Image (tube, rainbow, N blue to C red; front, side, top):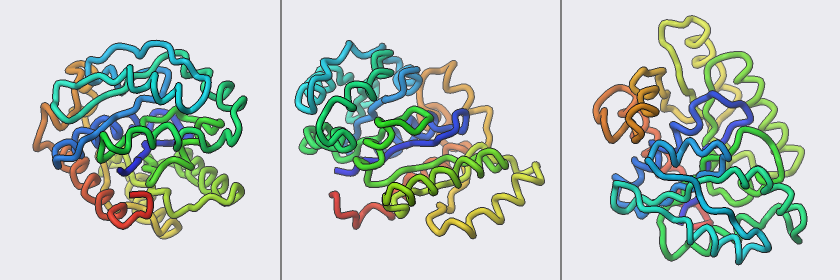
Length: 252
């Protein structure tokens, strides 16, 4: 089982669109896929027309896993399941802080799903909290959307700095360009220069696309309604890159 997270310190970078479309792309490959929506806003589940999760009993990793299992919802696409979010998730950090080994509890929770799924995708809140640290330690790969702008570049530097300070492996961080505009000179320059500083930068560039923005109207992944548009092809290319970089991962 592979655990892949869609994460960024900065909001508004295409994080949820990534999680939703990657989940669909992995499902297309025949992998049993679970999308876990950890963001209290619940946007990932919204795109799959799934309601909020019921409140979780967050006593320990076993009860959290049991309650998450109760909240699994089948999507309209067989083999792709969703665990929706809940506003109570905003208290996740408080609950985790009261547990022993508080930075490693999420991995224990997700191990309970190992026999049921080949891939778990997580849509994560845009901040660095105790829940984020659990995500970092639970993931086999962390996808980091980066808009080709100075502010987005700055938050990427902050994330790598945090990983080094906490002695986490930067090898699991895989930034890629998101919402890129070819006509924007600054975008082109950053796309050319930034990957030189980060060897793990993925090659696929997700373009800015009105088709992606329509996900909120259609309430389904882009890949389900605009199969061959440029952005859809880019998401599939990104999925293939992720499969390639995680196939020899020791967590399998």
